[in-house]
Length: 107
Image (cartoon, rainbow, N blue to C red):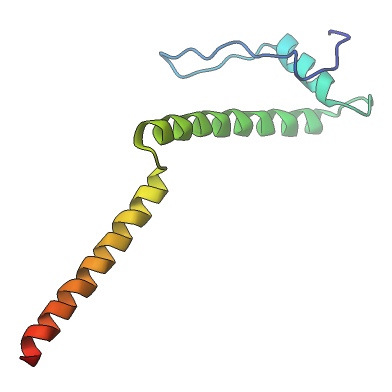
């Protein structure tokens, strides 16, 4: 294990884009865990497992964030923003149509 305790210098191996897998070696994982262990105490097996699960979630959210950034750059808005805009436009059109129907009936 490295004596460096900085997370800034740690980078995992790149993901295999064909199979969508990321392999983290024990050495890489121990290096990351060692850098995150600010207390310097021995890490229990349960804590190691929880850290690994958290790291997997982080990687999943990181990928989702990158995809959202790409979509935002491509479309100018997030998918949820586009859906909200479409729903608002649909509601406005329905109100306008209702107004037209009410206006025709009143004449």
